[in-house]
Image 1 (tube, rainbow, N blue to C red):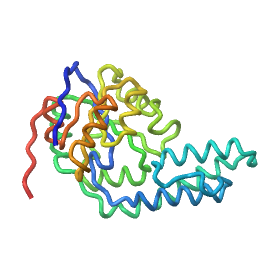
Image 2 (cartoon, rainbow, N blue to C red):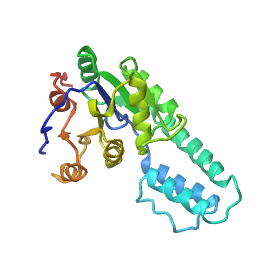
Image 3 (spheres, rainbow, N blue to C red):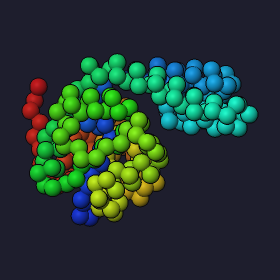
Length: 243
C-alpha cells in the first residue's frame, strides 16, 4: 500500500498521538458500543430509528444530544444521557484492557522522539481509566507529558479545543505541532485546530488504497503504513524486532 511523505517539514516541537489503533491495539467491541449508545439514547427520549449504528460513537452521541435538546425533554435529560453513556462505554473499554498490547514500534518511536527533545502528548476519546491503564500496561506512560481523554473536563475530541488544550499544556504553538492518528475523526480534529495531521494506516487495512485515498482527501500532510515509516517521516530511525 502506498504511503505519502510530507511535502515539507517545518521545525516541530510537539507531537500529539491518538491512542487506540495508533500506539496500542485493543479488543474494543465497537459494534456493541455503538448499539449501547443507541439503546441508552432511546431510553432518554430519542425516537427509535433516528440513530444508525453505522455512525461513529461521536456522531451518535452528538445526534442524540441534539435530538434531546430540541424535543422538549425535561431539563437535565441531556446530562443524564451523557453520564449514562459514558459509564457504559467506560465499562466496555476497561473490560478490554487485559487484551490491550502495544502497536509494533510504539516504544521505539516514542523513545527516539523523546531523545530528540520532542514534547509528546496524547489525545484520545477513550476514558481515563482505559487510557492510563493501557499506557502503563504497554510501557508508554513515561513518554507522555500531557494527555486528555473522554473523562477530562471540557471539550473532547473531535472538538479542536481538546487538541489545543494539550498543546497549551505542552507549551507548543499549533504551527510547531503535529497530530498523529488512524481515523478520519483525528484528521477533522487536527484540521479544526489548524495543526498538521499525519495519518497512520490501520494494522489490518481495508481494500488496497482505500485508506490512503481517504486520508489524502482529508488533507493529511503525511501518511505512513506503520510506526517505523512514521518515524522516518518525523526524522528518526527506529528498528522493530521481528516476532
